[in-house]
Amino acid sequence: MSGVNAQITDSITQVNTKVVGETPAMAMGNLLMSTNQALSNSAHNSTSAQQQASITMQAATVQGINSLMSIGSSVIGRSAENIIEKDD
Image (cartoon, rainbow, N blue to C red; front, side):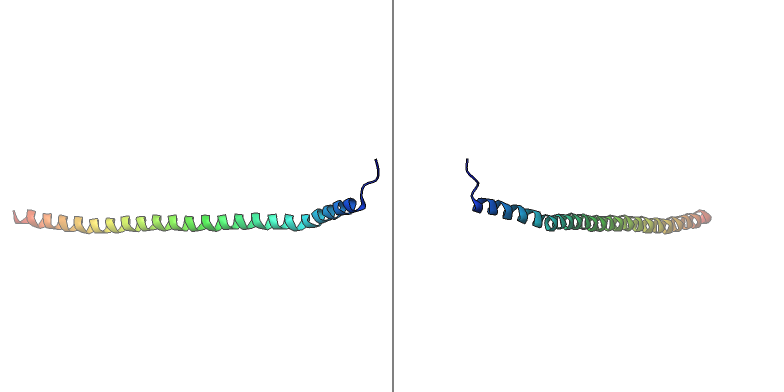
């Protein structure tokens, strides 16, 4: 078997050099993509948590106002009852 053609050897050497040369850039690109994905997930989770907290705070406010309104009604009802009972 004779020696390998010089052009084939040169081509393989260039491909191997290209792959080795691209590896750090590709690794950095993959790292940046993973970091960006994690940060975007974090931002989405933060937005979702703020929305849920806003809904909870709104519900608590409505319950508090309902309690205040019912206290006023019960005071008026009790006062009216006392007035009616005094007339008898």
